[in-house]
Each structure stands twice: as structure tokens, then as C-alpha cells.
Image (cartoon, rainbow, N blue to C red):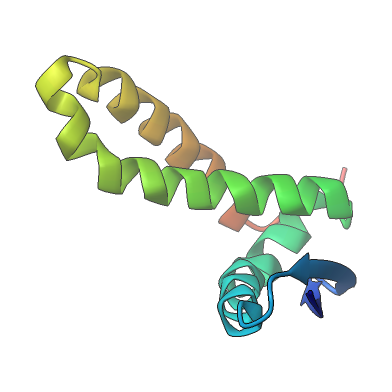
Length: 100
């Protein structure tokens, strides 16, 4: 069994995987890390919130890809509303935080 270390938002995580899956996991980790700089600022440094926001951004991107297929069974409108809400969250995360 393989094991790699992924560093996301400045934190290292040990991840076990099947032998040979290491390159794929590294690519997925890099995908997460690409969103980390913008999200870290908005999350106030909380690693749990940072990972949550990254997950929401990726879920939004995934729902956009799946939305056309879902419209045939009537769920497209719901997915569109969810995507809009997630986009609003992502936009808020990209705005500079104001000091209170």
C-alpha cells in the first residue's frame, strides 16, 4: 500500500492509497492547493474552514458540469440555484477581508 504526504493550505496530510495511485493523488492535491491562497485569507486562517471552502468551490464546479444532464429530469433548476449560492460564497471569499 502506498502512502504520500499532501500539503494543502500549509498543512501536511498523510494519505494512504493503492500502489500506483500516488501520481493521481498528487494531482488532486495540487488541484486543492490552487484554491488555497484565496480561500485562506477569507477563512481567517482556520484550516477546517479553508478545506470546507475549497470543497465548496470544487463542488460548485462539479455541479456546473453535471447541471446540463440533470435538466432532463427536472432537477436542473435546483442545481442552478445551488450553483448560484456557491458562486456567491466563492465571490465573497475572493473579496479582501475587512478588519473589524
